Amino acid sequence: MVIVAFRRAIKDIRDNKFLNVVSMITIALSVFIVSAFSFFFNNATNFLDAWQQGVRIIAYLADEVPEEDVPKSDVPEPDQSETAGPEMDRAGIREKILALEGVATVVFVSKADAYRDLQQKIGKQSSLLDGLDKNPLPDAFEITLDASFRNLDHIARLAGVIAQQPHVEEVEYAQKWLHRFSGIYNLFKITGLVLAGIFFIATFLIIANTIRLIMYSRREEIEIIRIIGADAEFIKYPLFIAGMAQGFFGSICGIGLLYAAFVLTIPGIPRDTVFALFEIRFISGMFAITMVLCSMLIGWVACVFSIRKFLKF
Amino acid sequence: MISMPEEKFIIRLFNVSKQYGKKEALKDLSLNIAENEFVFVTGPSGAGKSTMIKLLYRGETASSGDIIVDGLNLARISRKQIPALRRRLGVIFQDFKLIPTRTVYHNVSLVLEVAGRKPGEIRPLVMEALEYVGIDDRADELPPVLSGGEKQRVAVARAMVGAPRIVLADEPTGSLDPDSAARIFSLLEAVHRSGATVIVATHDQEMIRRHAVRVIRLENGRLVMPAQQDERLW
Image (cartoon, rainbow over all chains, first blue to last red; front, side, top):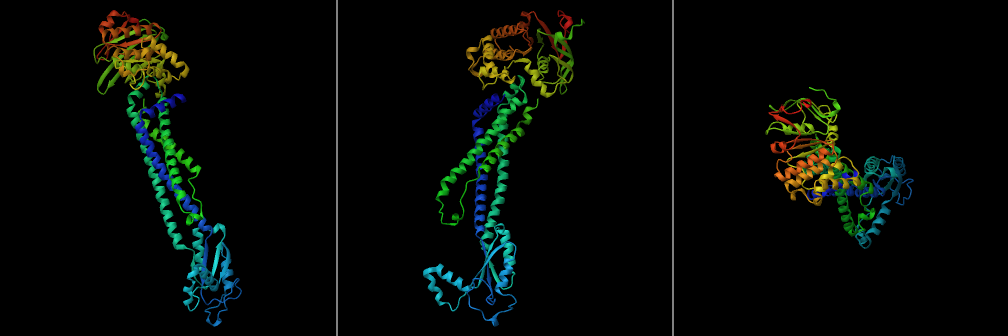
């Protein structure tokens, strides 16, 4: 029975080459687009993760904060008379920040250290700084987070809490860039999910129509086969196999197409840009298998949907 | 009416009527057909011959009455039982009903595939059937290239390859020349001699005259009992 069904399915596909090829191409394109979105998400997620692993919050302090016991502080002792509300010194602020949930380390960077770093970074152009009357850079705390808190929500929440600490004037964690990237990421995510839905519905309808056209083209043959005693399974199984074969080969082609694009374009991307942060990876094997199985399932369900009315005795 | 043991009848019709809308194709038809009997069903066009054949292979359902075919009450069988009923029958049509995209061989082998026979058994049985009807040399050809007589011989081979207990033929010679028609009838007689019950719906009076077999005559969907027929069968 199984051998006969496979043989008949192969014959159906051969006899209706054009319909089957069109159907497979459509499935291949659907799977290609859905897989391409998945490829983007996975790598964008990897990029965000990699970036978040190295994320730091910089809390810039007001000029008037007293020094006291702040570690690594080599700034000159400020004039106490200029300090507005010295109810809390730097050590106190540091302890308070360190006590916040998710904070791993808090390192004080004095304005003098920051000035030296800047001089080193701009190198030959450091003479530009010579014209300044005084060091314009503020003192700051450089805050790193526990691994489990290195995600956008926690970073933003923590940054908000730190910003409310006394003498903290400004908090920075590349939020504008991160929020913009995150916005694009979420937009693509929603678009991807909507497109995936649309493409799978389209795939379903296309397979259903292909099978229906095959049934129409074979309705005389089906009538004859029924007269000589074929049961519904004898007629259905080859069509189920044909529907699933369309899903299988279509999805394999779609994934193959994406892989070809991946192999041809990714090696050309320069590694000294943001792409150095993480390794660009192709869609996972599990996702590819899921796509193939989903396509086959859609092929099968589309068959069931389209042949019901043909098989009423 | 002489009572006969029930098992002698392979087909029984009890007060069978069939309506298509307001038109009554068969009216209150009752008859019995014995095992290994050869029967002609005749009558003018529209008399109900084809309807009767369709009812026997459950191509149609009777509007009322009971039809027993080889022990199965067709009014009571489920849809899933219909294929099993049809596998016990061989059916031949005026328009041959061959699949044009399949070779002669495959048209015949399909009956055995449908019956679930093993692939190894199929080839010898098909070739034997094709040889029997004298068309084995054209096994690999497609039906459209065959003549009408050849197509009908393929249809006979298809009807007999599964060794059915009953063969139904609906106007099997209706579109054939006299020589081809005679050959088809001799094949049907051979099928009958091999043990099958053969029911042939035809309006070919010449053919009926040449064969001394029972004739069921229908007119306007009603049975018309010929005087010379054996009463016990009605």
